[in-house]
Image 1 (cartoon, rainbow, N blue to C red):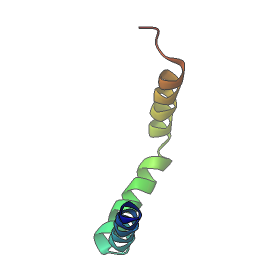
Image 2: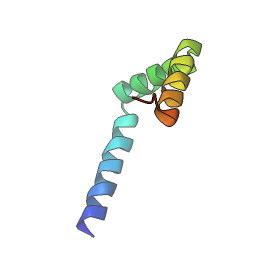
Image 3: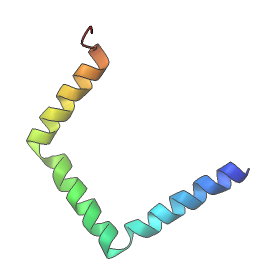
Length: 56
């Protein structure tokens, strides 16, 4: 029960941070970064490497 309350407290703190101007700026930067085609290619390559393995 205490662990559950801690988790909800953390989520509440995160939600409060997201409503601040700094939180909004971080969210906007993350959206821009995620929309970048080069970033998408790098993430796809990393995901492929992680799921298929390199054999070493």
